[in-house]
Length: 175
Image 1 (tube, rainbow, N blue to C red):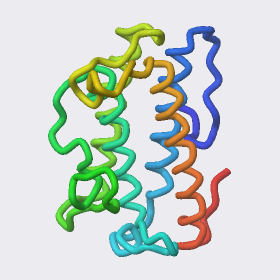
Image 2: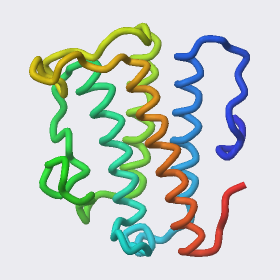
Image 3: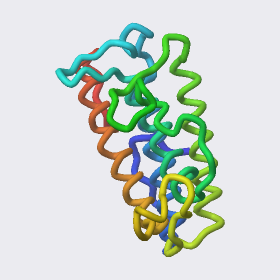
Image 4: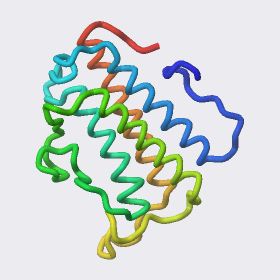
């Protein structure tokens, strides 16, 4: 496997394969950015907005599951907004004291397995199911392609946020 900071280079014209590779890449980048931080550093905010590295990690875990499992597949998800203190979309990110970095990283990778299965089994032009995240009142659910772009930009943006937080915490920077 290549370094998590090395962008995937695939010889594939299949966009689903490319999305899977880039999402895997960003999951690895996020996990690496948290390596070596103490539990106190993982649970302490260095930013005016107040979020901690573990809160950002739990957000990514839940965000991917919300879009691919609850959203696209329309499958029930316990606590779809579980990254939020009140399990509501507008509440702040939250990690219970008994949840560890290792648990969240394992959940991040498990979510990646589910996402790869979705991408392998569905066309990018397929629309999300009605009945999960999307209701008939919402209008036409987004395509899997739109969901892929949305989730990819979430990962890329938040990996950049973690770059800054890591540099503030201990001076480490990405490649």
